[in-house]
Image (cartoon, rainbow, N blue to C red):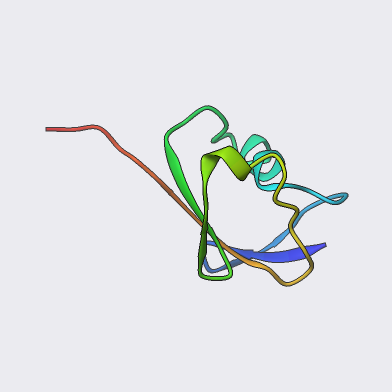
Length: 66
């Protein structure tokens, strides 16, 4: 299945969820904000929110600094 991830065409396998995508990208467990098709997906829904062909996903992760 093909999606747009942070503006880049990306191929994902199976029927992934937001949580599965975070695992594949190495961002699982990090503080991130996820938006699918311009709608924020709350962390509590990451395991239930299934991705579909052509979805536009934006993942923003916090970077510490000071």
